[in-house]
Image (cartoon, rainbow, N blue to C red; front, side):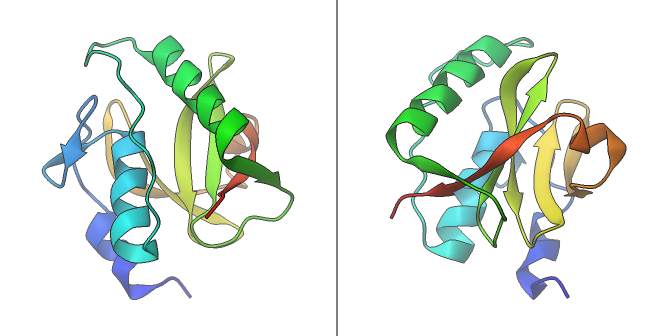
Length: 133
C-alpha cells in the first residue's frame, strides 16, 4: 500500500527547472517530496537554463551528486532516487515510494506514478541511490 501523501504529488504540471508546486521538473519534484515528506534536503545544483534540451546539464549535476553524496544501493527503499538514462544520458530521476513504484515527471507529462518493471523504464534504469544524511 502506498503512503497517503503520494496522491498530492500526482498531476503537478511539468515545467523545465520548475521549483514550485505550480510546476516542477523531475529534480524539482524530488526536492519537494524529499523535503516535505522525508525531511531530507536535496541540494539544487541544476544551474542550467530552462530550455527545451538540458539533458547534458542535468547529467553533469547528477554526476556531481553521485560523486559527492549519493550512494548506490541494490534494493530501493522509500525516498531513494532512481536514475534513468534518456537517449543514453543519465538525465532523469524518480523518487522511490517502495521497491516497485516511483514518482516522477518529464517533458510532456504531469507528475505521475511509474513502475520500475514497466518495460519503458526498466530498460532505462541506471540504478538506485540513497542520499547520505
